Length: 323
Image (cartoon, rainbow, N blue to C red; front, side, top):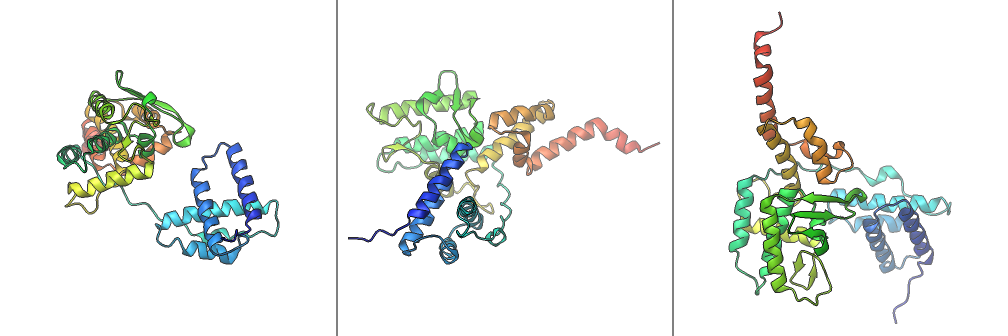
C-alpha cells in the first residue's frame, strides 16, 4: 500500500483560505487548480508542509510554462501563504519581490474580414475526421460568435441550450468574467449560423444526452474553454491563412478584432465614437470603459479614419495657421 503523506495542516489552511475567498465573491477555479498542483508536488516529494525549499522546487517545476503563467501561479501561492500567516506566525511566506513581474503581452495580430471568410471556407471543405460533422460545425460557430459578437472563448464554451434563443438571435451570458451576466443580440448572419448549427447538433446528438452545452464535443460532452481554444488554434494553424504573417493570431484576437471593428464602423457611418464606447463596453461585458480601452490600443485602421475626420473638420484651421 502507498503511504499517505501527512499534509493535514496544509489542507486545513487551503480549505480556510478558499472559504474566505468565496465569502468575498472571488472566482476561485484557478486558485483551486494551482493549490492542487502545489499539493501534488509536495506529496510526490514527501513533504509534510510548505517551506522555502518546497516552494522553490515547485516553482522550478513550472519552467515549461509561460513566464506570466509562472508569475500568476506564484502570486496565488503567495496570497495563500499571506492568509495563512495571519493565524500561523511561523508558517512560510515568500518575499513578494522574488516572484517576478509580468512581461508585456504581445500586441494582437490583426484579423481582417477576408481572412475570417477564408478560415471559414477552410473549415467547410476540411475532410471529416471519422464522421465528425458536428466538430466542424462547432468550430465554425465558435469563430463566428467570437468574431461577430466579441465573446470570450470561455463564454462560447459554457453556452447552454437554454441560453441561446435562435429565433430572436439573442444569447444569454451567465456569470462571466467580473461576475457579470448580460444579453448579447446577434447579427442576422450570426443568427443564421446559430440556427444552422443547432440543426446539425439535433441530428448528431442523442436526445437522451445529459449535457446541454451548445458546442458539443465528439467525446460526448461540452468543450472546456482550454479545449475549445486549443482546437480552434490548431484549425487556424492548419488553414495556412496566416502563412505569410509573423505569427498566427491568438484565439483571443477575435475579440480584439470585434472591439476594433465597432469604432471603425462608427467612423465610417459618421456616428459619434465617444458616445458609442459605453455601448461597446456593455456589449462586451466590461465593468467600465477602462477595460474596453485595453482592446483599443492597437487599431491603425481606426486611427486613419479618425485622422480623416479631423482633417475634414479642422484641416482648414491648421493650414491657415494662427492669426
